[in-house]
Image 1 (spheres, rainbow, N blue to C red):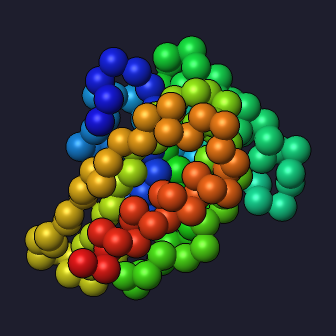
Image 2 (cartoon, rainbow, N blue to C red):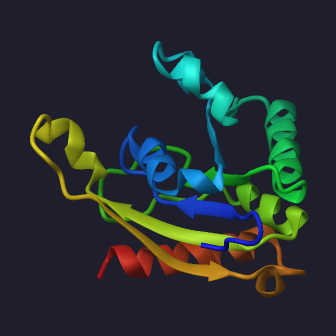
Length: 171
């Protein structure tokens, strides 16, 4: 992961534990996650998510979604925090990737920042295996520098990232 600049972290989504585990492992880099609005109302989460810059997005409200995108761009551009997103928009328990919401890639395009592509495996087993231990695999598949996405559309960047992640997950 880049250490000298903020970035957009893009990851597949297997479990509700994903953001917490990523934050635990890479938390020193301050990563603010975009999450669905409902998650900010979960009893325990509602106390720590806002303080960690988690941003709730209402998928039905385009203007509110745009505000979250602007805030994300501002967090990265100002150097305050990197932003983590799950472009599938929901958990996917299989090895396949769902369709991406390509709009999230506009964050990197407008913030002029690199994209860190990560895959995660095993977190979907945590709930089933509790209290036994579970093997979790978090892999950085690559860092796409801004120069590689400059001038590209969000759709083409989305397709590029989707290919990288799918190749890794189906190995």
